[in-house]
Length: 304
View 1 (tube, one colour):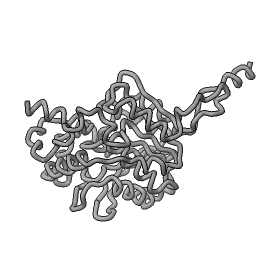
View 2 (cartoon, helix red, strand yellow; view 1 turned 45 degrees about the vertical axis):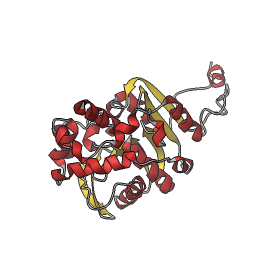
View 3 (cartoon, one colour; view 1 turned 180 degrees about the vertical axis):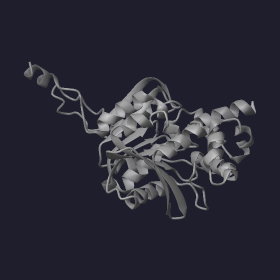
View 4 (cartoon, one colour; view 1 turned 60 degrees about the horizontal axis):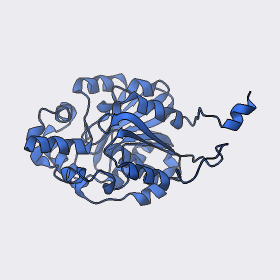
């Protein structure tokens, strides 16, 4: 019973990372560094060339979880991947994990690395961080992609909430055979912090939150991406899109009422695969590049 409850709890936070060998190979392929911001010693990696893309991983993961799709992203992008507070190679330190703080840290980190503006793509916990960065420093984010993220705690299916609230350091011993634990201890500055990380993430997941105010501050184009088997309720997804101005009226036969923001619900995907599914990034990249391959009916007829 305890084992099954633990598995459900882990599923609730999102979040598996790739093997440590993949993460190490990824780090060797690009520039790596550290930068301390308000007591947190952030680890980052920079790969590829092109328009800058800040890539943010899920909870209990690290930059290594994007290893399967990184080559797709670096074909035309300079990817800045950051191990978020307490995750991967970034230690917990003494500061509590808080999304608003992480968002502000990311704005400061990209500025310190010399970027005036970046595109941002975040998954789950990383999407929350990206949302807070974009809401707090909108001038620093050109376009924003949020993957598998509810804007409020009640956006999860109800059965997920008690499971999330039960996550704590007491689960650390039972996690030693999981990819989350193995990947963490392979790269963390202090592997002994893992129970504390679980305590911090459990506290974060148990607290009520509603980021509607942050959503309303977004001034840049935004894309929402989910799997059709995601842990976020479909009604919540639609309401999120409506908050961004989408889904309020028919777009018109000349697309004259088309929202600049986008919503994608991709088939045959759950929450636990979206971060490494190529179709997620094939969907996101044209949006990040400001492209649309769809012509209106009027444009099609005119071109004949």
